[in-house]
Length: 434
Image (cartoon, rainbow, N blue to C red; front, side, top):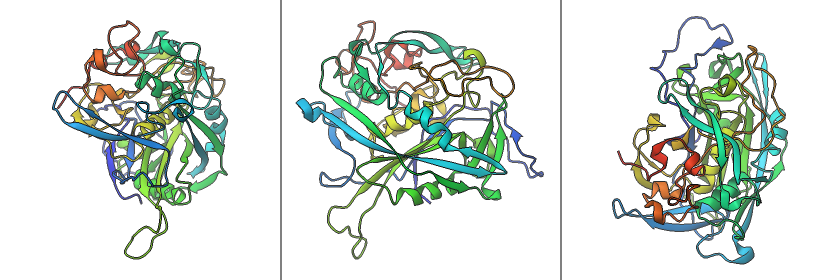
């Protein structure tokens, strides 16, 4: 089992938990939308990374937070946007995708079926990020409906007409390296053989969403042990991505906590020699696991509540957090946001956590576009990447000096990728403390 849970990510606030029943289980159990949360976890935080370490390409920077006067250091994937030049600014990271086939209670959740949808998505395909046809609107936040589909508009207008992958567009906006800038962080997908995991009876159960979609609910500790076993054979200079289909995790033997849909992490590896010392240039392995989500797991019909929480939303969350915090040891002044109260007061630089369920439409998605099993329609023909909080938000940078791409309105730099399209006032200004 992975050694530690450093913090909890992607989560939707829920009603008071329903205690696990001791009555005989009849599968699948229908789980209410109020009980079905969505979150992610970061694993094995705090690995120390030296310039000589064998790992993903990365750079180290530091920013002084004007709110408390503290200078925070951080590692990020790619080239240093402040010092790189020419071709040295253009970095490609290999992403080794391992589909995970899950057998649970007579049902199969086959990660192979979501490989092509993932490869065809904005994660690996180029799109124009100058605008988007739809984006999250607040709805009746914090009541229901909330985080519904709203009108789109200008997105990263400085990169309009520039073909980019999603994470490339995000990093370029974060550092205002847009337009003709040579700065890029590209991902190249390599498909590895699938692995099959059979879930013991005591380690998982079948659930069913309010729209009739079957969900594999698995104990997080047991699942993490399986992923950790796979991660030990990975290439430390690549990002291993373990891809599942509608697999959600729960903790503390409590099904009402079901909703971990991804995590990223790191752990020291390499050849050991006596007393645990690394022989030569030891490796630090980064990795991520995430589930591709069928439209009716979370997203309500017709652009309703958590409209954007479908397809690649969780995968985009984990990749973005890996890029901005690959070694899970980037800490900032503690922050708190009403859009993600379930995290409480946290000091981790996890770009997806503050903007849980907030996203936008991008690309054409021909996969799994039919009606939900109960006849309702949640799919809308698009992919749904998550918005991402950018470094200036965490560092309390004033809007006229954020160093990020200007907002669509021209009023200061943006604090999230969506900028003015993010409907919540808390992302039109720096993070607030606890």
